[in-house]
Image (cartoon, rainbow over the protein chains, first blue to last red):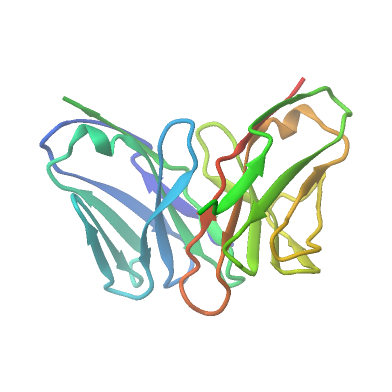
Length: 110
Length: 114
């Protein structure tokens, strides 16, 4: 059974700093997704990673996938307040269903 | 460009009551999903559908039913509401095929069962 673990679950950081969120998963998969959720809102797709070594970047966010290590990272560069949100990773299992991590609540302080 | 539309946004039910959560998408997506999100948790798949007339159970289907009579609509039925069904419910849709399964979500329904 595929399990997805994110860490940290909560992160408070200062503007301008860099940090990384980690997403580990327990069984083989080469499809991983990152989503963002603002408080009380729905989920918005950020990145789709479909192969080993895939790297995607948008603005201050960069996501990567290492399928051999069963690990994805979401790196935040020079954080700004607008990036405060909860970030979820989701991994596609053998039945093409998404299994979700618990989310990382990110608070960026001015 | 409506995308995925869910109704209602909020609902309070008494134990044992029934209700239907409505979901409609206008993107002609074959795949549709119902998830629940409990506080501080990731999403759990309740039911999904790969096309009109075809539905299947997800991780947590007990206490729920679905139907898919058209491509656009995918309602979720709660027959005998229980406090354990208090949650936020999201409907989503995606394209089919072997490509990336990027999901488009509705705005969610916050349900309380008291």
